[in-house]
Structures are given as C-alpha cells and as structure tokens.
Length: 342
Image (cartoon, rainbow, N blue to C red):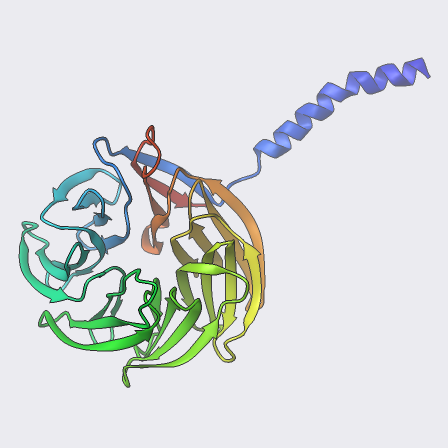
C-alpha cells in the first residue's frame, strides 16, 4: 500500500505538468498582434470607418471631438478636428470623402475631404444625431436623430443622398431612440434596434415606413445588431442583462439566446468561420454558428475597459477594437489589432 501511495505521489507533478501543457495549447479565437496607445485621449469612442484601398482606418472619438486616422497596421496618422460630438461615419471611396454624423448641441452631418481632411460642407439635422448605416444599392446614408427624452413617441431617420450630399427625406421610427441598423443585400429592408420601445423594427426603405415590430423578451438596452440574410436571422445584443438574441426574420420570433459580454456596442458576422463577435467591456464574446438555430459559445477574449467599439475587416483577417477610458481615472486608451485564428 505504501509503495502504491509513493508511486501516486511521484506521478502527481507529471500529471500537473500534462494538465498545464494541455491548457496552454488551448487557442483563443482572436490573437492580439498590435496595440497603439492613445495618450492624451479621454472618454468614449463610437464607430469605425474603413478606406480599404487607401489603407486607412477612421475612428470617431466622440468625447475628444475628433476623428482619428490610422493605417491598417494600427499606426496613428492624423487627428481630424472641428466636430462637436462625432459618432458614425461612412467613407466614400469613389469620391475620396467621408460623411460624419455629429451630435453636439445641434444635429448635423459633415462632408469631409479624404485628401486634406477639411470639412467641406454641412447639413443641419434634428438634435440627437447618432448612429447611421450606408446602403450601397441606392447610395443613401440613413442617420438616426433620436434623443433620450423619455416622453418622445417618435424620432427621425434622416436620409442623406451621398452622391449629392443632400437631405432628401425622413423615416419616422417609434420611440425616442434607436441604435444599430443593418440593410439587406437588395437594399430594400432595414432591421433596427428600437431602443426606446425595446423592439427590433423592420423598415421598408422604398415605402419609408416601419412594417413590423418584434418585442425583445426579458431584456433591454439593445445596442449591437447584425444580419444573417441567407439563414433568415437577425442577431442583436442587449445590455440589461448582457444577452445575445437570434431572431427569425420570417416570424419575428426569438430562436435562441445566450449570455454575452457586458456593455456591448458592436457585433460582426464572420462568414468564413461561421462566427459572431460581440465587443463589450473587458472581453469580446465569440459564438460559433452550428446552423440557423444552434450557436455555441467558444470564448471570451480579454480586451480592455469599455472596449466596445470595433470593426471586422475580413479582407485582412483582422478585428480592430478601440479601448476607451470613460469613468476610469487610470484607464489606458488604445487601438488594438487582433488577427482571427482558425
């Protein structure tokens, strides 16, 4: 018996080493390959924009009142100033210009040169300008102009023709505010998180009206959204509690839901690997899509405080994440570059 016990005790360190070795071999779905510190910055970032041909990345620094320009390796190139509170932007490669939504005391969008970074023109919109989505089919930019007034029953979705830089109309959305949006490939249907009414809205872009509203069950503060058109699914993420939802676009019903990262703000669908990335504070949650109805949580990748703003660039196999510092005195703001792992 004593001999057996001695052999077990002798083997225990080896077993522990094997366990450590196996654990060390577990690969994260994202690998950090570059970090660009942003000293002198404070507050939140909001959205990214991409100039793939020109190898530039744009980041709206809403509290810093600027749009930051980086190369695609993460090197900081330039700060574009002159904004009140920049939120979203779209880069127009054919024009070498960008349109920035600016939600300071007065709502507006600004046309900015991609050559010298000067503000060329401005359109005044209702107060509370925030998120936006670009429709490549009709070249329209849909800009949300909601606010946070609890009594407001509707808010505007302003339509900007990017070819002429003109405000050509509006769509009325229910509630006082909306968040992320996605448009189908035909450019005819939009899905939007109606934050003010706690619903997912479906918008007919040709008729310019809401045609369906799907309640979000047992959760609130819906921010991130992504569309899986081939599988007839819409993904959303809420903050209260932090939950990933899958909606069937044919029925408007929830197919499944899973916990996800807190304070989430952006979500991306990786077609090649059938993954979904949800970025929030401290971690990025990664799900794998088994089929239209089944999803597996495959990891929570450590990132940083309020690392909510992100953009997936599949052409480069990279996910870019902005780490904010709002509310944390010792926070270190930065741009992180992650390579997607097999």
